[in-house]
Length: 179
Image (cartoon, rainbow, N blue to C red; front, side, top):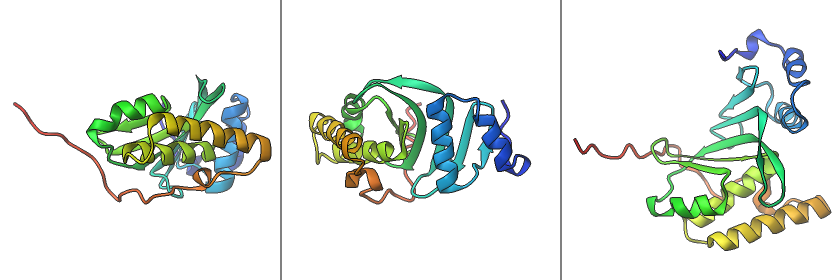
């Protein structure tokens, strides 16, 4: 489906479109529109913001992806930063959280969850794993405890409040030609 510019769709039209989306997707869309304004791109199945806050981009998907870590929830909100993962840390990131996606060529790291605070938490812990500050097991334990504490007290861990490091302005590894 072709991406439409919100200039052709007003906020009321966007809100009307997402009204039929599953609850998690609808709630994420409303939260992001309240925080970052209207998206720059709209399709029937996705909203897109570019360079919003600390993020390179934010995408909200109509169709959730079921994710059971640290507890069952729908992944609908994906957010990315520029980031160069050391090549020898990709397996660690995959073991840490399947909803953290590292793209070597693009030099991009994204997290997909249902809330922005959970994405901040996931990316901050991914940075800790990639830099060797935490083990995979420690990062998973920290993530689960932070989410559980938030659910019980409604207080966000500092790792949920924003990036705890500065992503590079540019990243990427175009690799090398072998033929």
